[in-house]
Length: 640
Image 1 (cartoon, rainbow, N blue to C red):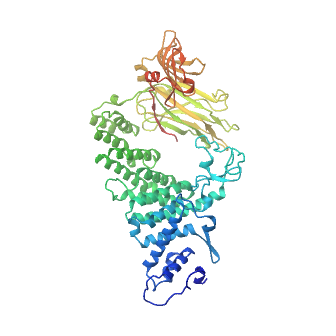
Image 2: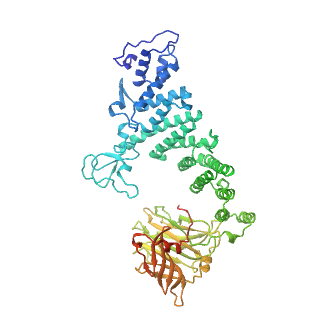
Image 3: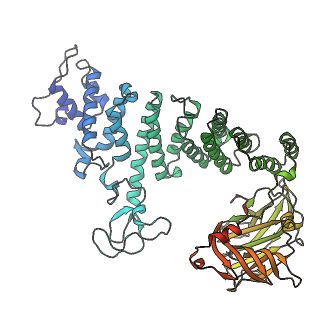
C-alpha cells in the first residue's frame, strides 16, 4: 500500500518525503501529515521511522501528544465511547480499532516522555480516563452509560447489564415493562453470551494496557496515578473472573504485591497500595492454586503485610494498625493450609500488642485469643508460659457464655462413605452440659442406596477424634428424623460421649457422609449447633431442661430453672427449633417476660405472658430488650 493512500485527499499540499540528512523544523504540513498517519492506523514507531533523518523524534512525539489531548477533550465527559461510525476506520484491506489504537499511541508517547508520567500531565489524565471509560458503543449499558459487567437480554430483545435489570438481594426484575418498547417483560433475563465473550476479550486487552501504564507510572514514582490504574485493572479482572484469565490475574496481582517491597514516597503512608486491594490480590493469587506461589511467594507477601501492621503499631498509627490486622486476619483465615506452622501470621499477639500500646483498659479479649490459639495448636507449654508472662490464671480468661457454630448451606456429591467436614468451631473453654442442634431440609438424591448422614464430632486439641454422634439417622432409613419432616432438632446431654468427653481446648466439627456409588449427593439448607457450658449452667442456678411450647404452640428446648413439678419457673431460655432464642423469665411452665432473638437481633418482646405491641412487625420494646440481653458467642471458625 502506498503511503500517500493514508493521507486524506483534501490535504493542502501533496505528501513528499525529503532525502535531506539534516533535521528540519516541523511545518504545518508535516504536522498535518503526521496526524493523518496516526489517525489512519500507523503506530508512533512507524511514523518516526518514516521521518527518520528529517524530523526529530521529539517533534513527532509532540504532534502525537497534541492529537491525543484533542481526542481526549472531545470525548463525552460522562465516559461515552465513540459512535458506531467512528469506532472503526477503513485502512487498506483491514480495519483498526481506534479505541485500542490510541491507547497504544498514548503508551508509546508516555514511554518516550518520562516527564509526562510524573508531572501534572493533560495527556496522562486523558489516557487514564480513556483506559477506564472508553469502549465500543455496544459495551455500554444503555440506561446508566457505564461499561457493562454482565450483559443480559430482556424478553423484549434489548440488552442491559444484569445489575440494571435485576434487583440486588431479592433477584427481582427491576422493570415491569421494557424501557424502550413499553411491552410487558417476562421475569427471566438471558445471558448475552456472545457479547459477554467480546466484552471480556476487550477487558483483557484493556487490562494489559493498564498494567503497561501502571508499570511506567511505578518506575517514574508516580504512585498516585499508579494506584488509580491498578484499581481500575483489578475491577476489570474481577469482571472477567480470575479463572477466566488466569495469566492476567497472576500478572496483575504480582505487580500490585511487588509494591510491598517498595518504600512509598509519601512517608506518612505505610504502603503504596491500600491493604484492602493488596488482600484482594493475594487472595486472588491464592485461588489460582499455583504451587510455586503457594509454597513461598504468597507466604512471604503475607508476612510483609504483618510487618506493615507491626510497623503501624510501633509508630502509634493505631487506626492503620487495626486496618492492617483486620486484613491479615482475613488472609490467615482463608489461607489456613498455606499459612500453617511457622508460616502462620501472628495476628493474635499483634492485636494484644496494639491493645497494650493503645492503652486499652480491657485486655482480656485479646489475651484470650492468644491463649486459646496456643491451646488450639496443641502448644500447651507455650500457653502456660503466656499465662505466667501476663500474670494470669486460665480461669481469668474464660468466657463461658453459651456459644454456637453453624453451616449456612451444603451441597455435596463426594462419592465415598467417609465423614467429611462441613464446619467447625474454635477451641472450647470448659466442659459442656448441653448441646442443641437444629437442621433444615436435609436430603439425598432420593434414589438408590441410603447413606446420607449428618454428624457432630468432638476433636482433641491435637486434632484426634474423641467421639462422634450420628445426629438424625441415615436418610430414607427407619427412624431418620427427616423422613417426613423438613426440620429436625436434637438435644444432647451428658449421656452422649460428645458432651461428656469435652475438655478445655477441644472443638466440635459438623460432619457429613454422602456415600459411595455413582450419583449420590447430599443437600442441606442450614445447620446450627448451640453449646452450653457446665459452669454457665451451674452459675445461673439452672437445674432443668425439657421440650416446651410457647403460647402459639411453637416448640423448642427449655434450659433453666424448674420448680418442684419439673417445669420452667424463674430465669431461663427457650431454644426454638427454628433458631430463635427466647431469654427471659418463666412461671409454672409458661413464658412470662423476655426477648426473642434471631441472628443476633432482638425481634419480639413479651410482658405479662403476652407479646408486646409491634412484636409481629419485629418492633420490640427496647426496655425489655435491655433487661434481657443476648449472651451468646459465635464460635464458627470455618465453613468448609
